[in-house]
Every structure is written in C-alpha cells, then in structure tokens.
Amino acid sequence: MSTVETITQVAEAIPKALKLRSADEEKADQPKEEYRYAHLLPVFPQDEHYDPLVPFEHVDPGLRALSHPNPRSFLDNATSIVQLTPHLGEEVRGVNLAQLDSDGRDQVALEVARRGLVVFRDQQDFIDRGPEFYLEWGRHFGRLHIHPTSGHPAGYPEVHLVYRDESSTFNFEQNNSITSTGWHSDVSYELQPPGTTTFFLLSQPTTGGDTGFTSQVAALKKLSPQFVAFLKTLKAVHSGYEQADYSRQGRRGGVVRREPVENVHPIVRKHPVTGEEALYVNRQFTRYIVGLKRQESDAILRLLYDHIDKSADIQARAKWEPGTVVLWDNRITAHTAIADYVETGQRRHGARITPQAERPIPAQEGLDLTPPDRRPFYYQQL
Ligand SMILES: O=C(O)CCC(=O)C(=O)O
Ligand SMILES: [Fe+2]
Image 1 (cartoon, rainbow, N blue to C red):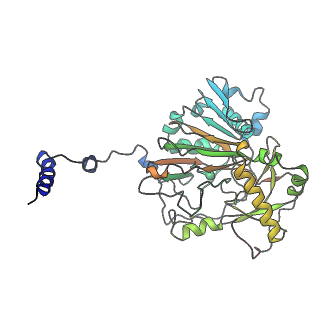
Image 2 (cartoon, rainbow, N blue to C red):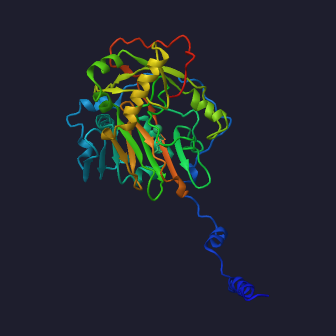
C-alpha cells in the first residue's frame, strides 16, 4: 500500500471514529420544523368546479370616502407616509389596517385609487388574523374572485396564492424567456376585473422577490394627444384561454375550476371614483384590438407593451419586509413579480385577495363593447 493510500484511509477513518457528520447529514436527521403557515400552503383539489361568473353591480367603496370631510383621516396616526415615486406608490407606517372600521376601509380604497399602490408596513396583526379575516377584509372592496387555476389554502378558494420553495413552484416556471418580468393587471379577461386588491407575503426570501408596479395613468399621459384620442376609440379582447390551457397541460396545479372566458374592454378606461383615465392593456391577457387588421393590432399592442416594460420613470418597487401588506388598484396600474431569488431555493409564499369591480368604463363615452362574432385567425400572444 502506498503512503498516499494509507493517509487517505486514515483520513476517512477519523470522522467515522469520532462520529463526525456533515451539516447536511445532521439536518436530514432532525425533525422538520413545522412551517408556521403550513395551513395556508396551496392545494389544487381536482374536483372543484364553478359555474361561469354572473354580472353584479359594483359600488366602489372609494366613492363613499369622496364625501367624507377628511378622506385621509385613517392616516392621522401614521408615523410615516412616504411617496415612493412622483407617479405612484406610497409607503405608510404606524396604521393598523386590521383595526380600521368600514369608514376607514372606504378611505383606504380612495387612497389606493389615488396613489395606485400603497405599501403598509407593520401589519403582522392583519396577517396573523388568518383567512376568515382576509375574506371579511376583501369583501368590503367588492365581490371576491375565485381564481380559475391558481392554488389556494384548503377551504379558502378566494385566497389566491403564489408559492415557491426549493422543491416546488406553482408560479414563475421557466418559460425560456430572457426576462422573468411580466407586466399585467390581474385576470383582466373577466367581464368585471378586479379593483382594490390586497397582497402580502407569509414567507419571503432574505433579499429579492420584490414586486414591480407601474402607473397606467402616467403611461397614458406620456403618449401624444393625437395618439391617445385614437386609442380611446379602440377596444381589445382579453383572454383567459391560454392560462387555462397551461393548466390543462398539467402545469401549475393542473386544475381549471371555471371554463375560460374572453371579454372586450376599452383600451383606455376611466376610474369610477377619481375619473382618471388609464391604459388598460397587458401582455399577459390582452390579445388583439377589435376591428383592426392583424399587423395594425400587433404593432399598436407591441408599442404599448414596450412602453409599459421600459418606462422605469413611472414604475415603483415594493420591497417586502416581514409584516408588509400591499394594496394596489388593478384598474389603473400594472405589476410584475420579480423572480430574482429563485436560485437561492428560499421560500416565497404570498396571498392575494382579489375583489372584482365594475365592468371597465370606456374613457370615450358610448364606445360599443359588443364582442366580435368570432375570434380572428391571427389570435396570438404577443
Ligand atoms: O409574486 C408577486 O410579487 C406578484 C404576483 C402576482 O402578480 C399576483 O399575485 O397578482
Ligand atoms: Fe398579478
């Protein structure tokens, strides 16, 4: 036996003799620590089916706050209010959302409509109250949407979850795209898409996983008046078909709880409370502009998507701290997950409460929103 072999054998024998074990071996043997929010992990029951959504009348809570003598009085005890950017976003500390009464919640709706995005810090109380409370909170802002394909906590289909850890993901699958950003307004294919939306993280990576937001009001204002005047005459088809197909291919959780729909929305919509006009197209769900030729529709949508993607001067990032609850108005903003942390394998677990609002109001009065007879052959995702 050579000297080298002898040394190797001795070196291997020492840890065994001393019962030295690697950190990984130690970890594998320890009982797994119960995850605090294990009861809120996503489930995808295969037998869950819902009928098509029926139209309902939405009265926006922000409207009630308009007639309040001081519609920002819910912020009276705030310890800090910071405007995140000139065009959208506000960060509030020192206000306990969970303790707001109906009047305070109306004011929140108005504040979110005005700032597009409001980041509330120190909301552990809200998060700890659990799913029954989340639903009660959300119902104040509109009829709660049940997502057709995403995961939800067992027994709470109205709570839409995003989830990723080292061994599983139900979001942010690799789709061979150079970037993971995907600006969108949530479920814009519904006839009555969401308004005041609440989202928070139950578990977050040590860094990364921010959420990006942009103002669709500012995006519209940056365009020339002539182009805006033309856009106001246009409407587009938004589709839930590809999202459903994706699940039917066995991806995400592999469920489709409600048959997908397509709906026609104005390209420029008007907010029912503030009267502000906003661009309402997004790469994820908008498919084509009704009545235009294929190349015209593709060119205009691409231009608008590029504008939304690139305009960092009207974007803000919500950086998550434990206990942060974020509200955005889906009618006048777009947002994107930022999947920059995925290589770390760290857990990110988020919950969204998604109240539906009014059918989008066209900025141009009287715009005919009758759906086209049939889908043109050039139907595609840009
Ligand atoms: O995970 C995020 O940061 C955002 C996810 C998202 O787009 C949503 O839940 O609506
Ligand atoms: Fe979203």
